[in-house]
Length: 228
Image 1 (cartoon, rainbow, N blue to C red):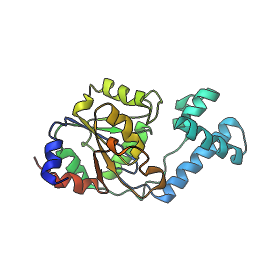
Image 2: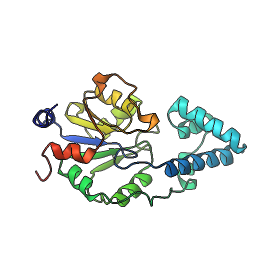
Image 3: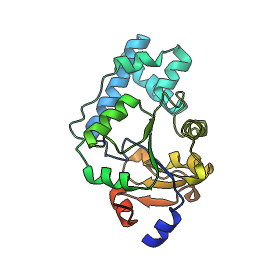
Image 4: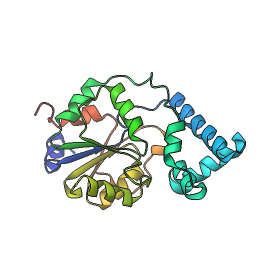
């Protein structure tokens, strides 16, 4: 699709919804290893099991519920505040300021919202590292979603209800193609931030993805919205 056509097809958008991790910045292998280790250690300590068993439980709950935390809450009565209090932040030294991307997103007409399966604390740390202090109007995190993770459409409906979003006038950007399926079903325009990570490959119908890019900054820049 040519640039004028892209811009024309997005002129009705009044709210831009962005995923965070691996969409606004690339997740490194070391960061993934840290996250995995932190989760395994928490499960082991909370359930008082060996680390090998904790990893099995962690993976099983993630596959079944889309979120290990959700599995622990449903099956073991975990208070999510305990999880957020005890699991520390990961090393963010590999996340660098990206003022060009921040300016590009800010230039988009309408509201901008972060939608993440992680916590608001994590999101704020990442946005600070990226140098995005005033780019986004709101953060919709896993707590705001009542611990219902993507791609459950109920969470998307909660997002729209809480922030008074008309899905027909919203666009969503995510690195996981499957996360765009419920957005499209509600009437949102979808942009797949394509990466080479295994978990984020296209596993949904093409009709659920309206645009594909591997560089969000260049994609916005080509629309000619910057500075408007």
